[in-house]
Amino acid sequence: MPGSPFQVSQQTPSLETYLLGRIDFRRCLDLQKQLLPQVAQRDDGQVVVLLCEHPTVVTVGRSGSAEQIATQARMIRNGQVEVLWVNRGGGSLVHSPGQLAIYPIVPLRWHGFSVGEFVERLQVGIVETLHEMNIHAHLLPGRHGVWGRTGQLASLGVAVRDWVSYYGAYLNVCPSMGLFRMVESDRLSEDRAGSLVAERGRGARMTTVKASLVRHLADAFGCERSHLYTGHPLLRRD
Image 1 (tube, rainbow, N blue to C red):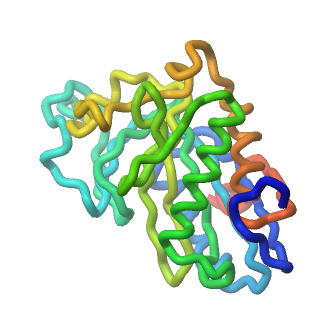
Image 2 (tube, rainbow, N blue to C red; image 1 turned 90 degrees about the horizontal axis):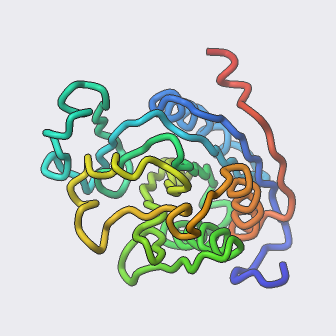
């Protein structure tokens, strides 16, 4: 594909994107786990991407610890915000409305991706999306995530089961920034949370971000065809 930093194989799969709206973190994780064997069993390399927002919750990944959580934060202390320990890479993260959760379910072996290359391609898709919005986004050597002048715009937390990826990335479009104080590491200057609204100095439409992101993820994962759906059939069976 012209302008792509990656080589695309002769056999190109499709990218199927499901817009889930606002969905509970656990319910979305259950959906990902149901999709893992389906994606693994296919022989066409199809990539599934779930895009959604979560009600406010704090998750702690495999590199996280209780020390990262500001347990005296009022919303945690009062039980308004739950802290979940999860089996993904990365540390402690805050999720809330206005943050776009990006969950690519990719059959890595079919595509010939190492875990490191998958992470690189995911980051490139996000960076190219932000460049299209005239945001000077960049990576930091030795770190996973995407940064801008206002701080970290996207955090990564990836997991792999049977060579299929799940979890993914969290892009701060227009969240309530005060919520990020619930995680102590976000108070460090290098790790302070930024957002697309802060970068642009004006609003950022979630629908615009999603449309651009789907195009750039399809490019990054070598998918020449993509389809967009609202909701997911497995959620309607709940």
